Image (cartoon, rainbow, N blue to C red; front, side):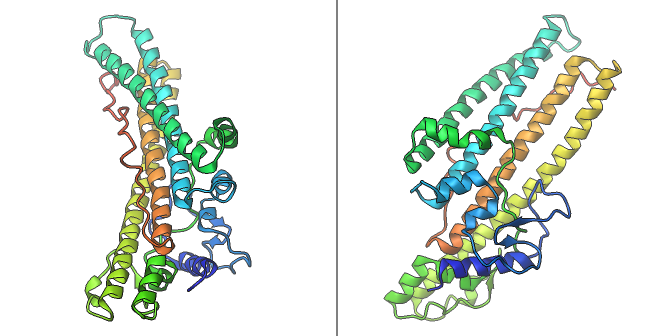
Length: 346
């Protein structure tokens, strides 16, 4: 069976030459992307191959996954990513609450041209409070999971995570999204090797070529031992689905990043307009909340992109695909409301 070192070297080679049509969000064009063995440019691989999670270039994740923790690698990495995302969302929720409170103070019960705006602000305030409560609860659950898996006290875990949670950057996998991966990488899966052993099949059978996001299963469905074929088909389907998910999430993250770029430019323009007394502070706070909404969407998109990378790596070599069951634990942010534009000056 191929060693994990061989798996990583092979995958690194693929990622090095893969098409980068849908690159990671938050990475400027032309940036040099390297993370240990995950080198995007056509350069020699380092002599020491590192585990897959080092591709996220996150020292805290490395300490959690490869340090004193004994939990499942993918589970630890996924929980850490989710904790980072929820910490970001909490920050934006608290800033939204502050901005809304400022708006309420500014209008001070005065009769406005649009008398429903005060009610809208009151609704936002309640929404923000509820969101903050839910996000704190989610963060507590992720912290509890990490503490249990790492056999650490909450105080020790908080100390370990303090710097990382104060950093707004989310883990990103420093490689382009591949168009396909070699089918031979499935040799690293425990289920493929077990099936080959049980049915006396060479595990390399049916593992020629590559696996893409739109896998054509009928090409191998009638070949070889039917039980081994079933294991290969299932594995190929899982990798193909993981690739599709990764490509979709990459596109979503790219689009969210461009929205944030535009939103930041618009907010800077609003600040200049406010300095010239062309718009009110109430309007400025409205525009600030628009920016916060776009930042919130980007944080969630980058988090989903990181999880999609984890799922792909797991589907290749952890014996079965990883289903990141975090979606059922997440809460649709109630801050994603339609920001009022009623105060917008022509």
